[in-house]
Length: 231
Image (cartoon, rainbow, N blue to C red):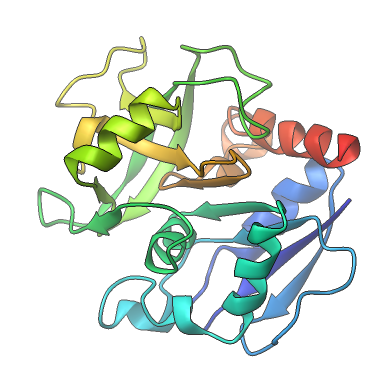
């Protein structure tokens, strides 16, 4: 099992992600954005959080055009696994690897707090260690996490069971108050058509050790390890 964590100018969550992967037993290395190829044997590409290129133009827009992203597209086209968290989710949408866009939060304020996520599907390599309807806690830290897509895309995500997580209360109820950034249909994370790409805004990597305040996010990384071992 070999993972690559991409590092762009302004990325700041690569060490958090490295620790989460280590806790799941996944070997990894950090790769700079100027590389034009992924290391041989790469199974998983991870795009961590931060503020790539200072969030100029649109969040993730410049990073999506970095040299390494052509290799990421090729990896995804071969059926490789890809995980994008926060700024990584923004980059994936800007690169066309996931549908939709991440807009300014509905409050027009940066949100930095814990939130709760309801697992909407257990039928993916990322969510198989949860049951559908399970609730986990994870930190959010973003100014542009308001997920938006058109009606046709939303209908496809719903029909194809590609909504991975929704914002919810601690009891698992999807409410307007729980959907703090205003995301359409309270969407917090989505899957690609082949279910091997996941993008989500909150940070499960920061809930993988009791010293972080809990291990709610660890099942995601253990599920990835299961998928890589079986691949």
